[in-house]
Image (tube, rainbow, N blue to C red; front, side, top):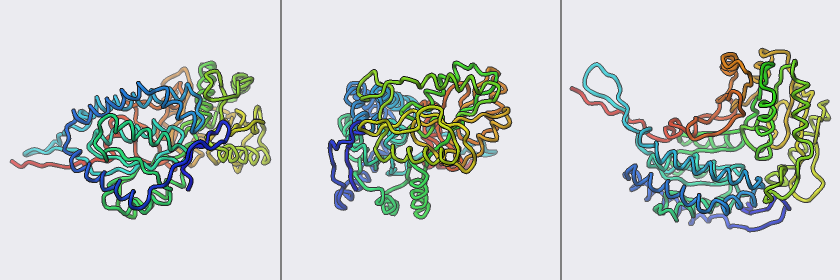
Length: 455
């Protein structure tokens, strides 16, 4: 398997890395296991000091780390810098709040005393994606390291320099060797690693297929797992919405990170009364966007992560149009070198079409017009995914009522789905299970031990 940096702006190879040998992998896991034996007994103060130092180093190295993201997966440089800021906030959040989240919780009993004590469980194996190569790792590493666990990460094969940079940050911050380990491995090695008794839990962010494979391996070996998988978020706009706000959020929510986010606003569902006006304004926002080098601050449309990704989206769009959907704008590859695809809006999408059922992981918005909010809810729920979603209405109580009827893990009212350290993040149905971030995220991989004291 190639572990390689290929710049998607020009599809040129930049740097290659060797996969770990069996002996090297064993040394990594043995070192992590040894590190856990002492880290589990460390104080919250010591753990907090480490995460704050990692955050501080990221502030110092923000520009170079952001450039690594843009080099390896094509994110616009301003958005890459924003990703580093997000990471910093996650590390600082858990450094400040973990002790409070994990403090003993009393259990009411009729006699004597009982309480729950949270204890770390061991090495947590993370399988991480390329679309947010620093932030997705931070969301998994920060809470678990603060809980007293240690982390081993198999990162996406197309972002190896980002993967190595994170491990280097922890070492530079003074982390004992083994607290955070980067594993240059192929995906086919993950199932075998699940058999290792030293691996206590597994977390994956990625595709349905990868999640199913990891869940099978974890379940077979009785390991706790957390999965954050795909999404096809519904972005519902009711007739009493602030139209300008809704359109602005639709553009950002769908086309941020070139649409390569699990929580992108992939299905734009608008009540018929305002659908024409919304679509007109939505299209206008996409006309004339500057295509170019993602390292250039003025670029508005950069490449996708890989040539393979661009080819897949082209295939999905072509299949959908062939089945009868219409293109409002875009719809094809941009005629230049690199993994580019035009920002696209599709309409007249029906059941049975590719775009109706599949997640399109790129700059393609599926636009639906519906009769009323009941039809919007029905359409929103007609998906195998259930990650995030949005409802736009000036009547907040109405919006909350609609939100409560959507089968999804998160709903944002009058904004597109977003991620913050203090908000729990996760989905339902085929979007996975478990939660990241907030107090819920730090409770996934701890032993909630009951201690009972009799009178």
